[in-house]
Image (cartoon, rainbow, N blue to C red; front, side):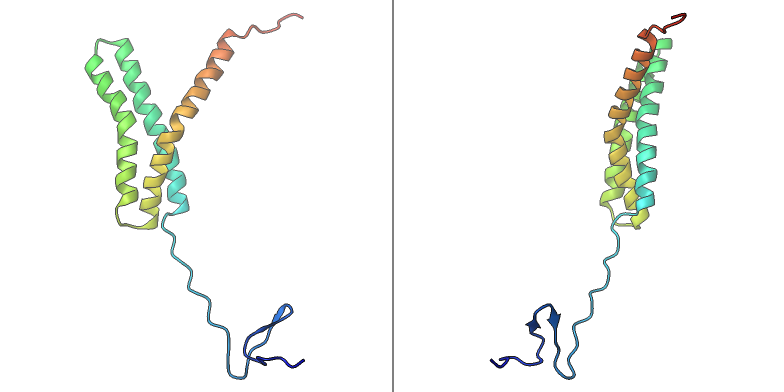
Length: 135
């Protein structure tokens, strides 16, 4: 049986044949990245450090001195600043690195409680574990 569409780009098995003077369309250009990868990692580190750092400093100041107001401000600043700054940087137009840093701040803010809780559990287990000395 004769091929009803000879040489016009129809499939024959796994190969595609093209007619004379016809070529496949060019591949589309690659899309630019919306977020920079290095910026995301830097933002994650900064988000975790800022969230845990400001919160711990606020708690330490609040427990060591009669500075309840300052401690509350630092604690809330540690909770709100990375998230707010991350949303602003990720949502506004800018370079992929800056937008990636904003996205990383948001991710770091979300990961910080998990890291902090894991650290607290390790400290508690370490404090209450009795070593086997002399056995």
